Length: 614
Image: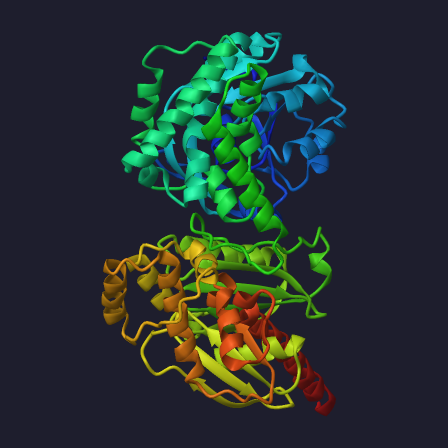
Protein backbone atom coordinates (compact mmCIF):
# COMPACT_ATOMS: atom_id res chain seq x y z
CA UNK A 1 0.00 0.00 0.00
CA UNK A 2 2.90 2.40 0.65
CA UNK A 3 3.98 2.05 -2.98
CA UNK A 4 0.49 2.96 -4.15
CA UNK A 5 0.38 5.99 -1.91
CA UNK A 6 3.78 7.23 -3.04
CA UNK A 7 2.82 6.80 -6.72
CA UNK A 8 -0.34 8.82 -6.18
CA UNK A 9 0.93 11.35 -3.65
CA UNK A 10 0.66 14.24 -6.10
CA UNK A 11 -2.28 12.92 -8.09
CA UNK A 12 -5.04 15.50 -8.21
CA UNK A 13 -8.69 14.46 -7.97
CA UNK A 14 -11.64 16.84 -8.20
CA UNK A 15 -15.14 15.99 -6.98
CA UNK A 16 -17.99 17.87 -8.68
CA UNK A 17 -21.27 17.89 -6.74
CA UNK A 18 -20.87 17.97 -2.96
CA UNK A 19 -24.09 16.34 -1.89
CA UNK A 20 -23.97 13.38 0.50
CA UNK A 21 -22.44 11.00 -2.08
CA UNK A 22 -19.78 13.44 -3.28
CA UNK A 23 -19.01 14.66 0.23
CA UNK A 24 -18.38 11.16 1.60
CA UNK A 25 -16.19 10.25 -1.37
CA UNK A 26 -14.18 13.49 -1.24
CA UNK A 27 -13.39 13.00 2.46
CA UNK A 28 -12.08 9.49 1.89
CA UNK A 29 -10.06 10.35 -1.24
CA UNK A 30 -8.27 13.09 0.68
CA UNK A 31 -7.72 10.78 3.65
CA UNK A 32 -6.18 8.28 1.20
CA UNK A 33 -3.41 10.77 0.41
CA UNK A 34 -4.65 12.33 -2.83
CA UNK A 35 -4.82 16.08 -3.41
CA UNK A 36 -8.55 16.71 -3.60
CA UNK A 37 -10.56 19.68 -4.84
CA UNK A 38 -14.30 20.02 -4.33
CA UNK A 39 -16.70 21.92 -6.56
CA UNK A 40 -20.33 22.87 -6.02
CA UNK A 41 -22.48 25.65 -7.52
CA UNK A 42 -23.98 26.42 -4.09
CA UNK A 43 -21.81 29.31 -2.91
CA UNK A 44 -23.19 29.12 0.62
CA UNK A 45 -22.01 25.53 0.81
CA UNK A 46 -18.55 26.24 -0.65
CA UNK A 47 -18.05 29.18 1.72
CA UNK A 48 -18.86 26.95 4.68
CA UNK A 49 -16.49 24.24 3.42
CA UNK A 50 -13.70 26.81 3.05
CA UNK A 51 -14.29 27.96 6.62
CA UNK A 52 -15.20 24.79 8.53
CA UNK A 53 -14.40 21.88 6.20
CA UNK A 54 -16.63 18.83 5.81
CA UNK A 55 -17.96 16.68 8.64
CA UNK A 56 -19.36 13.15 8.41
CA UNK A 57 -21.49 11.84 11.26
CA UNK A 58 -23.59 8.71 11.72
CA UNK A 59 -22.15 5.35 10.82
CA UNK A 60 -18.97 7.07 9.52
CA UNK A 61 -17.49 9.86 11.64
CA UNK A 62 -14.75 11.98 10.07
CA UNK A 63 -13.87 15.64 9.61
CA UNK A 64 -11.74 17.02 6.78
CA UNK A 65 -10.72 20.45 5.53
CA UNK A 66 -10.12 21.24 1.86
CA UNK A 67 -7.83 23.99 0.60
CA UNK A 68 -9.12 23.69 -2.98
CA UNK A 69 -12.79 24.70 -3.07
CA UNK A 70 -14.52 25.97 -6.22
CA UNK A 71 -18.02 27.21 -7.05
CA UNK A 72 -17.92 26.67 -10.83
CA UNK A 73 -16.61 23.97 -13.16
CA UNK A 74 -14.87 26.56 -15.35
CA UNK A 75 -12.97 27.82 -12.30
CA UNK A 76 -12.10 24.25 -11.34
CA UNK A 77 -9.84 23.82 -14.37
CA UNK A 78 -7.26 26.02 -12.60
CA UNK A 79 -6.72 23.04 -10.28
CA UNK A 80 -5.54 20.93 -13.26
CA UNK A 81 -7.07 17.64 -12.02
CA UNK A 82 -5.76 14.28 -13.20
CA UNK A 83 -9.12 12.68 -12.44
CA UNK A 84 -12.67 14.00 -12.09
CA UNK A 85 -15.46 12.48 -10.02
CA UNK A 86 -18.94 13.63 -11.03
CA UNK A 87 -21.61 13.15 -8.36
CA UNK A 88 -24.63 15.07 -9.64
CA UNK A 89 -28.29 14.53 -10.38
CA UNK A 90 -28.78 13.08 -13.86
CA UNK A 91 -30.73 16.23 -14.74
CA UNK A 92 -27.60 18.32 -14.13
CA UNK A 93 -25.04 16.03 -15.79
CA UNK A 94 -25.44 17.12 -19.47
CA UNK A 95 -24.70 20.76 -18.64
CA UNK A 96 -21.75 19.73 -16.47
CA UNK A 97 -20.29 17.56 -19.24
CA UNK A 98 -20.36 20.50 -21.67
CA UNK A 99 -18.09 22.38 -19.26
CA UNK A 100 -15.86 19.37 -18.57
CA UNK A 101 -15.38 18.84 -22.33
CA UNK A 102 -13.63 22.25 -22.44
CA UNK A 103 -10.83 21.10 -20.08
CA UNK A 104 -7.42 21.16 -21.73
CA UNK A 105 -6.36 17.83 -20.16
CA UNK A 106 -7.69 15.41 -22.80
CA UNK A 107 -6.36 12.34 -20.97
CA UNK A 108 -8.21 13.05 -17.70
CA UNK A 109 -10.52 10.24 -16.61
CA UNK A 110 -14.06 11.03 -15.41
CA UNK A 111 -15.76 8.82 -12.81
CA UNK A 112 -19.54 8.86 -12.88
CA UNK A 113 -20.61 8.29 -9.24
CA UNK A 114 -24.36 8.39 -9.72
CA UNK A 115 -27.45 6.19 -9.61
CA UNK A 116 -29.32 4.81 -12.60
CA UNK A 117 -28.90 2.72 -15.72
CA UNK A 118 -26.81 4.10 -18.62
CA UNK A 119 -25.82 7.33 -16.84
CA UNK A 120 -22.18 6.65 -17.73
CA UNK A 121 -23.17 6.97 -21.40
CA UNK A 122 -23.81 10.68 -20.81
CA UNK A 123 -20.12 10.88 -19.89
CA UNK A 124 -18.71 8.63 -22.61
CA UNK A 125 -20.82 10.25 -25.35
CA UNK A 126 -19.02 13.53 -24.63
CA UNK A 127 -15.41 12.50 -23.85
CA UNK A 128 -15.24 8.94 -25.21
CA UNK A 129 -15.39 5.51 -23.57
CA UNK A 130 -11.63 5.35 -22.97
CA UNK A 131 -11.88 8.22 -20.46
CA UNK A 132 -15.14 7.19 -18.78
CA UNK A 133 -15.37 5.23 -15.51
CA UNK A 134 -18.42 4.25 -13.47
CA UNK A 135 -18.77 3.83 -9.72
CA UNK A 136 -21.69 1.96 -8.15
CA UNK A 137 -22.27 3.50 -4.73
CA UNK A 138 -23.49 1.35 -1.85
CA UNK A 139 -23.60 4.01 0.84
CA UNK A 140 -26.06 6.82 1.51
CA UNK A 141 -26.53 9.87 3.68
CA UNK A 142 -28.43 13.10 4.10
CA UNK A 143 -27.35 16.66 4.77
CA UNK A 144 -27.94 17.98 8.29
CA UNK A 145 -26.18 21.21 7.34
CA UNK A 146 -24.68 22.39 4.02
CA UNK A 147 -21.28 20.95 4.93
CA UNK A 148 -22.35 18.10 7.25
CA UNK A 149 -23.57 14.70 6.09
CA UNK A 150 -25.15 12.08 8.30
CA UNK A 151 -24.08 8.75 6.80
CA UNK A 152 -27.11 6.48 7.15
CA UNK A 153 -25.54 3.24 5.91
CA UNK A 154 -22.62 1.67 4.05
CA UNK A 155 -23.06 -1.84 2.70
CA UNK A 156 -19.63 -2.66 1.26
CA UNK A 157 -18.28 -2.92 -1.25
CA UNK A 158 -18.76 -0.11 -3.75
CA UNK A 159 -17.80 -1.07 -7.30
CA UNK A 160 -15.59 0.75 -9.82
CA UNK A 161 -14.98 -0.06 -13.48
CA UNK A 162 -13.55 1.42 -16.64
CA UNK A 163 -16.31 1.62 -19.26
CA UNK A 164 -14.16 -0.05 -21.93
CA UNK A 165 -11.65 -1.74 -19.56
CA UNK A 166 -8.82 0.49 -20.84
CA UNK A 167 -8.09 1.93 -17.39
CA UNK A 168 -7.99 -1.23 -15.31
CA UNK A 169 -4.73 -0.31 -13.57
CA UNK A 170 -6.08 3.12 -12.56
CA UNK A 171 -9.28 1.47 -11.29
CA UNK A 172 -7.32 -0.97 -9.15
CA UNK A 173 -5.17 1.82 -7.67
CA UNK A 174 -8.19 3.91 -6.69
CA UNK A 175 -9.94 0.90 -5.15
CA UNK A 176 -6.82 0.02 -3.13
CA UNK A 177 -6.60 3.59 -1.81
CA UNK A 178 -10.26 3.67 -0.77
CA UNK A 179 -10.04 0.25 0.85
CA UNK A 180 -7.09 1.48 2.91
CA UNK A 181 -9.30 4.21 4.43
CA UNK A 182 -12.25 1.86 5.15
CA UNK A 183 -14.38 2.80 2.13
CA UNK A 184 -14.08 -0.64 0.55
CA UNK A 185 -14.44 -0.43 -3.23
CA UNK A 186 -14.01 -3.42 -5.52
CA UNK A 187 -12.52 -3.21 -9.02
CA UNK A 188 -14.68 -4.95 -11.63
CA UNK A 189 -14.75 -5.35 -15.40
CA UNK A 190 -17.08 -3.52 -17.77
CA UNK A 191 -19.23 -6.66 -18.11
CA UNK A 192 -19.51 -7.06 -14.33
CA UNK A 193 -20.40 -3.36 -14.18
CA UNK A 194 -23.63 -4.01 -16.09
CA UNK A 195 -24.85 -6.47 -13.49
CA UNK A 196 -23.80 -4.27 -10.54
CA UNK A 197 -25.52 -1.25 -12.11
CA UNK A 198 -28.76 -3.12 -12.77
CA UNK A 199 -28.78 -4.64 -9.28
CA UNK A 200 -28.39 -1.23 -7.61
CA UNK A 201 -30.95 0.37 -9.93
CA UNK A 202 -33.50 -2.36 -9.26
CA UNK A 203 -33.15 -1.74 -5.52
CA UNK A 204 -33.56 2.02 -6.04
CA UNK A 205 -36.47 1.66 -8.45
CA UNK A 206 -38.34 -0.71 -6.16
CA UNK A 207 -38.95 1.94 -3.49
CA UNK A 208 -38.04 5.42 -4.75
CA UNK A 209 -41.07 6.17 -6.91
CA UNK A 210 -43.44 4.37 -4.55
CA UNK A 211 -42.23 6.45 -1.59
CA UNK A 212 -42.45 9.66 -3.61
CA UNK A 213 -45.98 9.05 -4.88
CA UNK A 214 -47.19 7.64 -1.56
CA UNK A 215 -45.39 10.18 0.65
CA UNK A 216 -43.89 7.33 2.65
CA UNK A 217 -40.48 6.72 4.12
CA UNK A 218 -38.76 3.49 3.09
CA UNK A 219 -39.43 1.94 6.49
CA UNK A 220 -43.13 2.85 6.22
CA UNK A 221 -43.40 1.32 2.75
CA UNK A 222 -41.75 -1.92 3.87
CA UNK A 223 -43.91 -2.21 6.99
CA UNK A 224 -47.13 -2.57 4.97
CA UNK A 225 -47.91 -5.92 3.33
CA UNK A 226 -49.78 -4.25 0.46
CA UNK A 227 -46.89 -2.01 -0.52
CA UNK A 228 -44.38 -4.85 -0.06
CA UNK A 229 -46.38 -6.79 -2.66
CA UNK A 230 -46.01 -3.84 -5.05
CA UNK A 231 -42.27 -3.69 -4.34
CA UNK A 232 -41.92 -7.40 -5.10
CA UNK A 233 -43.73 -7.08 -8.42
CA UNK A 234 -41.63 -4.04 -9.43
CA UNK A 235 -38.50 -6.10 -8.77
CA UNK A 236 -39.82 -9.12 -10.67
CA UNK A 237 -40.60 -6.98 -13.73
CA UNK A 238 -37.06 -5.56 -13.66
CA UNK A 239 -35.46 -9.00 -13.26
CA UNK A 240 -37.34 -10.25 -16.33
CA UNK A 241 -36.10 -7.30 -18.38
CA UNK A 242 -32.53 -7.76 -17.11
CA UNK A 243 -32.62 -11.43 -18.13
CA UNK A 244 -33.57 -10.35 -21.67
CA UNK A 245 -30.45 -8.15 -21.60
CA UNK A 246 -28.40 -11.27 -20.71
CA UNK A 247 -27.98 -10.11 -17.10
CA UNK A 248 -28.61 -13.10 -14.88
CA UNK A 249 -29.31 -12.95 -11.16
CA UNK A 250 -29.34 -15.85 -8.73
CA UNK A 251 -32.63 -17.68 -8.16
CA UNK A 252 -33.24 -16.12 -4.74
CA UNK A 253 -32.40 -12.59 -5.89
CA UNK A 254 -35.91 -11.21 -5.33
CA UNK A 255 -36.04 -12.59 -1.79
CA UNK A 256 -32.60 -11.13 -1.04
CA UNK A 257 -33.76 -7.76 -2.31
CA UNK A 258 -36.82 -7.83 -0.07
CA UNK A 259 -34.71 -8.83 2.92
CA UNK A 260 -32.29 -5.99 2.19
CA UNK A 261 -35.08 -3.45 1.73
CA UNK A 262 -36.75 -4.66 4.91
CA UNK A 263 -33.86 -3.08 6.82
CA UNK A 264 -34.39 0.30 5.15
CA UNK A 265 -34.36 3.34 7.40
CA UNK A 266 -37.20 5.65 8.32
CA UNK A 267 -36.25 8.34 5.79
CA UNK A 268 -37.13 9.28 2.22
CA UNK A 269 -35.08 8.09 -0.76
CA UNK A 270 -33.48 10.77 -2.90
CA UNK A 271 -36.10 10.69 -5.66
CA UNK A 272 -38.92 11.08 -3.14
CA UNK A 273 -37.16 14.09 -1.59
CA UNK A 274 -36.91 15.72 -5.03
CA UNK A 275 -40.56 15.01 -5.83
CA UNK A 276 -41.77 16.35 -2.48
CA UNK A 277 -39.76 19.53 -2.99
CA UNK A 278 -40.85 20.18 -6.60
CA UNK A 279 -37.44 19.42 -8.08
CA UNK A 280 -36.75 17.42 -11.27
CA UNK A 281 -36.36 13.71 -10.52
CA UNK A 282 -34.15 10.94 -11.92
CA UNK A 283 -37.11 8.70 -12.74
CA UNK A 284 -36.04 8.32 -16.40
CA UNK A 285 -32.86 6.51 -15.33
CA UNK A 286 -34.54 4.32 -12.69
CA UNK A 287 -38.00 2.87 -13.40
CA UNK A 288 -38.00 4.69 -16.76
CA UNK A 289 -34.97 2.71 -17.99
CA UNK A 290 -36.59 -0.57 -16.94
CA UNK A 291 -39.62 0.42 -19.03
CA UNK A 292 -37.39 1.45 -21.97
CA UNK A 293 -35.50 -1.84 -22.03
CA UNK A 294 -38.75 -3.75 -21.50
CA UNK A 295 -40.19 -2.22 -24.66
CA UNK A 296 -37.03 -3.18 -26.51
CA UNK A 297 -37.76 -6.84 -25.73
CA UNK A 298 -41.59 -6.56 -25.87
CA UNK A 299 -41.83 -7.22 -22.12
CA UNK A 300 -44.71 -5.60 -20.22
CA UNK A 301 -43.55 -3.58 -17.22
CA UNK A 302 -46.90 -2.32 -16.02
CA UNK A 303 -45.95 -1.26 -12.48
CA UNK A 304 -42.70 0.39 -13.50
CA UNK A 305 -44.56 2.24 -16.25
CA UNK A 306 -47.31 3.29 -13.83
CA UNK A 307 -44.89 4.76 -11.29
CA UNK A 308 -42.76 6.38 -14.00
CA UNK A 309 -45.79 8.15 -15.45
CA UNK A 310 -47.18 9.10 -12.03
CA UNK A 311 -43.87 10.69 -10.97
CA UNK A 312 -43.67 12.56 -14.28
CA UNK A 313 -47.26 13.75 -14.00
CA UNK A 314 -46.71 14.95 -10.44
CA UNK A 315 -43.45 16.65 -11.44
CA UNK A 316 -45.15 18.42 -14.36
CA UNK A 317 -47.98 19.56 -12.10
CA UNK A 318 -45.59 20.88 -9.48
CA UNK A 319 -43.45 22.63 -12.07
CA UNK A 320 -46.23 24.26 -14.05
CA UNK A 321 -48.52 25.29 -11.20
CA UNK A 322 -48.40 29.01 -10.56
CA UNK A 323 -50.79 29.04 -7.61
CA UNK A 324 -49.55 26.04 -5.66
CA UNK A 325 -46.43 26.83 -3.62
CA UNK A 326 -43.80 24.20 -2.96
CA UNK A 327 -44.88 21.26 -0.81
CA UNK A 328 -43.70 21.13 2.77
CA UNK A 329 -40.12 19.89 2.83
CA UNK A 330 -40.82 16.79 4.90
CA UNK A 331 -37.50 15.18 4.21
CA UNK A 332 -35.13 18.07 4.84
CA UNK A 333 -34.84 21.39 6.63
CA UNK A 334 -34.14 23.83 3.81
CA UNK A 335 -37.44 24.36 2.02
CA UNK A 336 -37.21 27.54 -0.06
CA UNK A 337 -33.77 28.32 -1.36
CA UNK A 338 -34.61 29.53 -4.83
CA UNK A 339 -33.07 33.00 -4.89
CA UNK A 340 -30.17 33.63 -7.28
CA UNK A 341 -26.59 33.84 -6.08
CA UNK A 342 -24.88 37.21 -6.39
CA UNK A 343 -22.18 35.65 -8.62
CA UNK A 344 -19.36 37.18 -6.68
CA UNK A 345 -20.74 40.74 -6.69
CA UNK A 346 -22.16 40.65 -3.17
CA UNK A 347 -19.14 42.40 -1.68
CA UNK A 348 -20.04 45.61 -3.53
CA UNK A 349 -23.32 46.14 -1.66
CA UNK A 350 -24.92 46.23 1.77
CA UNK A 351 -27.51 43.62 2.68
CA UNK A 352 -30.14 43.35 5.38
CA UNK A 353 -31.34 40.21 7.16
CA UNK A 354 -34.80 39.60 8.56
CA UNK A 355 -35.34 36.57 10.82
CA UNK A 356 -38.85 35.41 11.73
CA UNK A 357 -38.60 32.94 14.61
CA UNK A 358 -42.02 31.32 14.36
CA UNK A 359 -43.47 28.46 16.35
CA UNK A 360 -43.09 25.97 13.49
CA UNK A 361 -40.39 27.40 11.20
CA UNK A 362 -37.64 29.99 11.42
CA UNK A 363 -37.66 32.03 8.21
CA UNK A 364 -34.78 34.07 6.82
CA UNK A 365 -34.98 36.86 4.20
CA UNK A 366 -32.07 38.87 2.82
CA UNK A 367 -32.63 42.06 0.80
CA UNK A 368 -30.23 44.39 -0.94
CA UNK A 369 -30.05 48.20 -0.87
CA UNK A 370 -32.84 48.36 -3.43
CA UNK A 371 -35.09 46.18 -1.23
CA UNK A 372 -34.85 43.32 -3.71
CA UNK A 373 -35.05 39.85 -2.16
CA UNK A 374 -31.82 37.98 -2.89
CA UNK A 375 -32.19 34.98 -0.57
CA UNK A 376 -34.88 33.21 1.45
CA UNK A 377 -34.88 29.95 3.34
CA UNK A 378 -36.64 28.30 6.28
CA UNK A 379 -35.63 25.82 8.97
CA UNK A 380 -37.79 23.92 11.38
CA UNK A 381 -37.87 25.77 14.68
CA UNK A 382 -36.16 23.91 17.54
CA UNK A 383 -34.95 21.24 15.13
CA UNK A 384 -32.77 18.63 16.78
CA UNK A 385 -29.96 19.57 14.41
CA UNK A 386 -29.66 23.09 15.89
CA UNK A 387 -26.28 23.37 14.24
CA UNK A 388 -28.18 23.85 10.96
CA UNK A 389 -29.56 27.20 12.14
CA UNK A 390 -26.12 28.40 13.15
CA UNK A 391 -24.64 27.28 9.85
CA UNK A 392 -27.33 29.03 7.82
CA UNK A 393 -26.78 32.30 9.68
CA UNK A 394 -23.01 32.04 9.27
CA UNK A 395 -23.34 31.11 5.61
CA UNK A 396 -25.72 34.01 4.92
CA UNK A 397 -23.33 36.47 6.54
CA UNK A 398 -20.42 34.98 4.61
CA UNK A 399 -22.21 35.27 1.28
CA UNK A 400 -23.86 38.65 1.92
CA UNK A 401 -22.20 41.40 3.99
CA UNK A 402 -25.11 42.02 6.36
CA UNK A 403 -25.31 45.63 7.65
CA UNK A 404 -28.18 45.11 10.10
CA UNK A 405 -30.37 42.24 11.29
CA UNK A 406 -33.93 42.46 12.57
CA UNK A 407 -35.55 39.61 14.55
CA UNK A 408 -39.28 39.04 14.94
CA UNK A 409 -41.69 36.27 15.90
CA UNK A 410 -42.09 34.17 19.04
CA UNK A 411 -38.38 33.72 19.62
CA UNK A 412 -37.25 37.24 18.70
CA UNK A 413 -36.00 38.07 22.22
CA UNK A 414 -33.78 34.98 22.19
CA UNK A 415 -31.93 35.88 18.99
CA UNK A 416 -28.62 37.42 20.15
CA UNK A 417 -27.46 38.60 16.72
CA UNK A 418 -30.35 41.04 16.23
CA UNK A 419 -29.63 44.75 15.88
CA UNK A 420 -33.36 45.49 15.89
CA UNK A 421 -36.32 43.61 17.40
CA UNK A 422 -39.87 44.14 16.09
CA UNK A 423 -43.22 42.42 16.63
CA UNK A 424 -44.51 40.19 13.85
CA UNK A 425 -47.53 42.51 13.55
CA UNK A 426 -45.33 45.42 12.50
CA UNK A 427 -43.21 43.25 10.21
CA UNK A 428 -46.29 41.73 8.55
CA UNK A 429 -47.76 45.18 7.93
CA UNK A 430 -44.51 46.50 6.46
CA UNK A 431 -43.95 43.39 4.31
CA UNK A 432 -47.43 43.42 2.80
CA UNK A 433 -47.43 47.21 2.34
CA UNK A 434 -44.34 46.94 0.18
CA UNK A 435 -46.53 45.21 -2.44
CA UNK A 436 -50.01 46.50 -1.52
CA UNK A 437 -49.87 50.00 -0.02
CA UNK A 438 -52.90 51.67 1.53
CA UNK A 439 -55.72 50.58 3.83
CA UNK A 440 -56.06 46.79 4.09
CA UNK A 441 -56.81 43.75 6.22
CA UNK A 442 -53.99 41.22 6.69
CA UNK A 443 -54.95 37.74 7.86
CA UNK A 444 -51.93 35.83 9.15
CA UNK A 445 -52.65 32.14 9.79
CA UNK A 446 -49.67 30.83 11.72
CA UNK A 447 -48.62 27.68 13.50
CA UNK A 448 -50.10 28.66 16.87
CA UNK A 449 -52.40 31.66 16.29
CA UNK A 450 -54.48 33.67 13.83
CA UNK A 451 -54.03 37.42 13.53
CA UNK A 452 -56.10 40.01 11.68
CA UNK A 453 -54.17 43.26 11.21
CA UNK A 454 -56.05 46.39 10.12
CA UNK A 455 -53.81 48.93 8.36
CA UNK A 456 -54.70 52.57 7.70
CA UNK A 457 -54.18 54.36 4.40
CA UNK A 458 -50.67 55.37 5.51
CA UNK A 459 -49.80 51.64 6.02
CA UNK A 460 -49.57 52.01 9.82
CA UNK A 461 -51.47 49.57 12.05
CA UNK A 462 -54.84 50.86 13.21
CA UNK A 463 -55.90 47.76 15.15
CA UNK A 464 -55.36 44.02 15.38
CA UNK A 465 -57.31 40.97 16.57
CA UNK A 466 -56.18 37.51 17.73
CA UNK A 467 -58.06 34.23 18.00
CA UNK A 468 -58.90 33.54 21.63
CA UNK A 469 -59.40 29.78 21.56
CA UNK A 470 -55.87 28.47 22.15
CA UNK A 471 -54.42 27.05 18.91
CA UNK A 472 -57.72 26.18 17.27
CA UNK A 473 -57.80 26.87 13.56
CA UNK A 474 -54.02 27.24 13.24
CA UNK A 475 -51.31 25.20 11.55
CA UNK A 476 -50.77 22.93 14.53
CA UNK A 477 -54.54 22.33 14.74
CA UNK A 478 -54.66 21.27 11.07
CA UNK A 479 -51.66 18.96 11.47
CA UNK A 480 -52.96 17.18 14.57
CA UNK A 481 -56.56 16.81 13.41
CA UNK A 482 -55.52 15.67 9.90
CA UNK A 483 -53.22 13.09 11.45
CA UNK A 484 -56.10 11.68 13.48
CA UNK A 485 -58.19 11.52 10.28
CA UNK A 486 -55.28 9.78 8.50
CA UNK A 487 -55.18 12.52 5.85
CA UNK A 488 -51.83 13.48 4.36
CA UNK A 489 -51.28 17.21 4.76
CA UNK A 490 -49.98 17.48 1.19
CA UNK A 491 -53.23 15.99 -0.19
CA UNK A 492 -55.67 17.74 2.14
CA UNK A 493 -56.37 20.93 0.15
CA UNK A 494 -56.93 19.01 -3.11
CA UNK A 495 -59.30 16.59 -1.35
CA UNK A 496 -61.38 19.39 0.17
CA UNK A 497 -61.63 21.11 -3.19
CA UNK A 498 -63.52 18.10 -4.57
CA UNK A 499 -66.14 18.12 -1.79
CA UNK A 500 -69.53 19.85 -1.52
CA UNK A 501 -69.72 19.09 2.23
CA UNK A 502 -70.89 21.99 4.41
CA UNK A 503 -70.59 20.75 8.00
CA UNK A 504 -67.85 21.98 10.35
CA UNK A 505 -66.07 20.61 13.40
CA UNK A 506 -67.89 22.09 16.38
CA UNK A 507 -65.10 21.64 18.89
CA UNK A 508 -62.69 24.51 19.51
CA UNK A 509 -60.26 22.32 21.44
CA UNK A 510 -57.92 20.13 19.43
CA UNK A 511 -58.48 17.19 21.79
CA UNK A 512 -62.27 17.28 21.38
CA UNK A 513 -61.93 17.95 17.65
CA UNK A 514 -59.98 14.69 17.32
CA UNK A 515 -62.83 12.85 19.04
CA UNK A 516 -65.33 14.45 16.68
CA UNK A 517 -63.17 13.42 13.70
CA UNK A 518 -63.25 9.81 14.94
CA UNK A 519 -67.05 9.98 15.05
CA UNK A 520 -67.11 11.14 11.42
CA UNK A 521 -64.83 8.29 10.45
CA UNK A 522 -67.02 5.71 12.19
CA UNK A 523 -70.00 7.12 10.32
CA UNK A 524 -68.16 6.38 7.08
CA UNK A 525 -67.87 10.00 5.97
CA UNK A 526 -65.71 10.23 2.79
CA UNK A 527 -62.20 11.50 3.39
CA UNK A 528 -62.69 14.53 1.13
CA UNK A 529 -65.70 15.58 3.25
CA UNK A 530 -63.67 15.24 6.43
CA UNK A 531 -60.97 17.45 4.93
CA UNK A 532 -63.58 20.01 3.88
CA UNK A 533 -65.15 19.96 7.36
CA UNK A 534 -61.78 20.70 8.97
CA UNK A 535 -61.25 23.69 6.69
CA UNK A 536 -64.78 25.00 7.26
CA UNK A 537 -64.16 24.98 11.01
CA UNK A 538 -60.97 27.02 10.44
CA UNK A 539 -62.81 29.50 8.22
CA UNK A 540 -65.50 29.91 10.90
CA UNK A 541 -62.84 30.77 13.45
CA UNK A 542 -61.23 33.31 11.11
CA UNK A 543 -64.54 34.98 10.26
CA UNK A 544 -65.26 35.55 13.97
CA UNK A 545 -62.42 38.08 13.89
CA UNK A 546 -63.28 41.64 12.87
CA UNK A 547 -62.74 42.58 9.22
CA UNK A 548 -63.14 45.98 7.51
CA UNK A 549 -64.94 45.00 4.30
CA UNK A 550 -64.32 48.43 2.76
CA UNK A 551 -60.60 47.55 2.47
CA UNK A 552 -58.82 44.74 0.56
CA UNK A 553 -58.06 41.44 2.32
CA UNK A 554 -54.69 39.69 2.02
CA UNK A 555 -53.64 36.29 3.38
CA UNK A 556 -50.13 35.52 4.60
CA UNK A 557 -48.40 32.80 6.64
CA UNK A 558 -47.21 29.25 6.20
CA UNK A 559 -50.68 27.72 6.47
CA UNK A 560 -52.13 29.50 3.42
CA UNK A 561 -48.99 28.58 1.47
CA UNK A 562 -49.85 24.89 1.80
CA UNK A 563 -53.66 25.03 2.05
CA UNK A 564 -54.86 27.19 -0.88
CA UNK A 565 -58.46 25.94 -0.54
CA UNK A 566 -58.77 28.29 2.46
CA UNK A 567 -58.66 31.25 0.09
CA UNK A 568 -61.59 29.87 -1.90
CA UNK A 569 -63.64 29.19 1.23
CA UNK A 570 -62.94 32.64 2.68
CA UNK A 571 -63.95 34.31 -0.60
CA UNK A 572 -67.22 32.39 -0.55
CA UNK A 573 -67.84 33.38 3.06
CA UNK A 574 -66.85 37.04 2.69
CA UNK A 575 -68.38 37.34 -0.80
CA UNK A 576 -65.30 39.36 -1.61
CA UNK A 577 -61.98 38.80 -3.43
CA UNK A 578 -59.20 37.65 -1.11
CA UNK A 579 -55.57 37.94 -2.17
CA UNK A 580 -52.63 35.72 -1.23
CA UNK A 581 -49.31 37.53 -0.98
CA UNK A 582 -46.57 35.83 -3.02
CA UNK A 583 -44.21 33.73 -0.89
CA UNK A 584 -46.67 34.18 1.95
CA UNK A 585 -44.57 32.19 4.42
CA UNK A 586 -41.74 34.74 4.13
CA UNK A 587 -43.74 37.99 4.30
CA UNK A 588 -42.94 38.59 7.99
CA UNK A 589 -39.21 37.90 7.61
CA UNK A 590 -39.22 40.17 4.53
CA UNK A 591 -40.84 42.92 6.62
CA UNK A 592 -38.15 42.37 9.26
CA UNK A 593 -35.46 42.78 6.60
CA UNK A 594 -37.09 46.07 5.56
CA UNK A 595 -36.97 47.21 9.20
CA UNK A 596 -33.27 46.23 9.33
CA UNK A 597 -32.64 48.43 6.29
CA UNK A 598 -34.66 51.27 7.79
CA UNK A 599 -32.66 51.08 11.03
CA UNK A 600 -29.43 51.34 9.02
CA UNK A 601 -30.67 54.50 7.29
CA UNK A 602 -31.66 56.04 10.64
CA UNK A 603 -28.34 55.19 12.29
CA UNK A 604 -26.46 56.69 9.33
CA UNK A 605 -28.53 59.88 9.63
CA UNK A 606 -27.78 60.13 13.35
CA UNK A 607 -24.06 59.67 12.71
CA UNK A 608 -24.11 62.39 10.04
CA UNK A 609 -26.03 64.74 12.35
CA UNK A 610 -23.56 64.13 15.17
CA UNK A 611 -20.64 64.78 12.86
CA UNK A 612 -22.24 68.07 11.73
CA UNK A 613 -22.75 69.25 15.33
CA UNK A 614 -19.13 68.48 16.16
